[in-house]
Image (cartoon, rainbow, N blue to C red):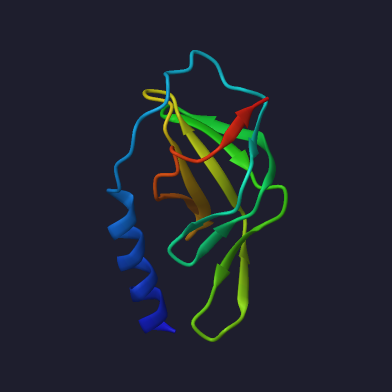
Length: 118
């Protein structure tokens, strides 16, 4: 259990620094984000669908997944997490996030994916 958590933590740290082309800066939050294709960040799977605005902080907006974010475990089964897509206020970049250890943890950089702002 501890080994799996450590592997996951290292995978997250490796992905947090991934770079891609930033999107245009947004002045206000879209109502929803339509994710066109499944996205994977390490063992986390963000399924296609409409992600609705669920909250905000000083850095951006959080969009809840239509169903839970799936984590493929090393034991061959799926673990479901609350989470979704984070949209940064400063540069419009998209990241995944999961509710982890009592807070929202941002992971990866999915700015280059096909989405529609609704």
